[in-house]
Amino acid sequence: MKRRTFLQNSALLGAGMFASKLSFADFQTVFPTVRVPLKDRHFNSKAVEDMIKEFQKNVADKELGWLFNNCLPNTLDTTIYDETKGNRKLTYVITGDIDAMWLRDSSAQVWPYLPIMKKDPKLKDLILGLINKQSECINIDPYANAFYNDPTKKGEWFSDHTAMKPGIHERKWEIDSLCYPIRLAYHYWKETNDKTPFDDVWVKAQENTLKTFIEQQRKDSLGPYQFSRTTSRGSDTLQVDGYGYPVKPVGLIVSSFRPSDDSSVFPFLIPSNLFAITSLRQSAEILRKVKNNTELASKMEALANEVEAAVKQYGIVDHPTHGRVYAFEVDGFGSYLMMDDANVPSLLALPYLGAVDVNDEVYQRTRNYILSDKNPFFFKGKFAEGIGGPHIGRDMIWPMSIIMRAMTSTNDEEIRECVQTLKRTHGDTGFMHESFHKDDPKKFTRHWFAWTNTLFGELLWKIYKEKPSLLK
Image 1 (tube, rainbow, N blue to C red):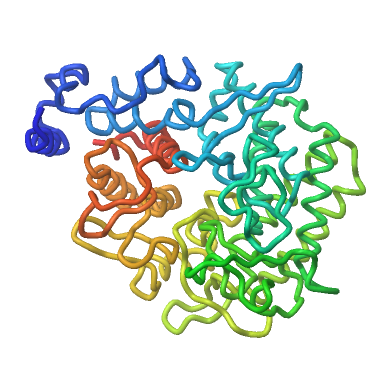
Image 2: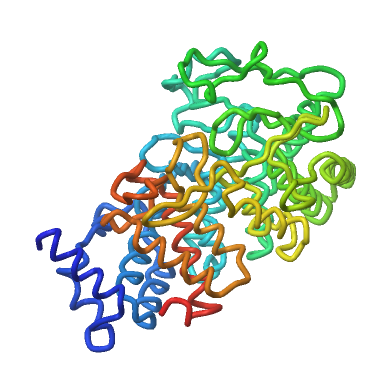
């Protein structure tokens, strides 16, 4: 079918025409098959396929049904590699069009599948294998953010000026790289009550996590981590001798890089510090209840309490328009940066991560600031409004930010508009992307970005189960 006809019919469907008379199967010529063929999929889950069938059966908007079918299983279809050795489950999960496993991305990519593990034992084993793999990676180098499945591989960033090792894709120190594996393991445990992941390897990873966090409080020294890269892109390297700009030791943890993999300006990244508080307490709960390791658990809790007090003292600032809000980054000396970035953790996404209550007054004021023209990376154009960031640049909105806006909203119309925005900005591909231009959704970055695809599936399923009328 010609692209013009496809677009015309898509517009009609988006307006609700024909939906009551024809089934999704009748529109196979309208919505082309873009999902990976069954024979080429890396992993198949009946529980996920059942979700897709239920959604498409009960949601009248056929374009949303098409998108859900493409996006929710994208991680399973395209990024999963089974590396099981003997009885030890191991799973390697690439991010998409980059053949490497980020600790953050891989955790987020499988997150929407946690609630259905009980229906699919193989899916449970897949996630168990990822938790095991992440623990091994952390023990190779807790400062690295991304790894290869081949422990001997030297990749494109091996020439970076830092303590690189074979098997490491990139060594950018980001707090959230150690938080996401805890989040995944904690909720896996809560869903299954399975204690299998919490072996000596996992405990060692927790010890390394705590050690790294304390080192990056920089109380006694700058710590062992240095990083610089020969590059023309300033946000891809660290200033001031590879340590980043100075900080005053106040109890916060330095995150040299953001979850966008861009370097921080002021190294105390507040959304990541808030995420760390939650993660430290989750780790402590597992250590105490599963391992009876009260000593390490107590150290985790003490650090969480210290960081929490420091965030309250140094991470909340007075904005001239919005009042008391969370800063994005601070240095402990009194300097702070006001913005938000599309990547998660972000200030916008804090309730989604369980880091703050959605009704918290400081968060709500911060949210209002983030979603306004006072945020230098909030863009508004012909097709959409949303948050971007320095990683891609001006006027490029990240679908992830629109998804997080919906995930953290208590306003039905705001949620509905977020869904409709995402539906009209997939660039005729049937998938979400890293970013798209505010005036032209066909101008996008990363054709294959599994995290955002799966996250969009998570959002649609959440709305379908909680407020299905918003999908009409």
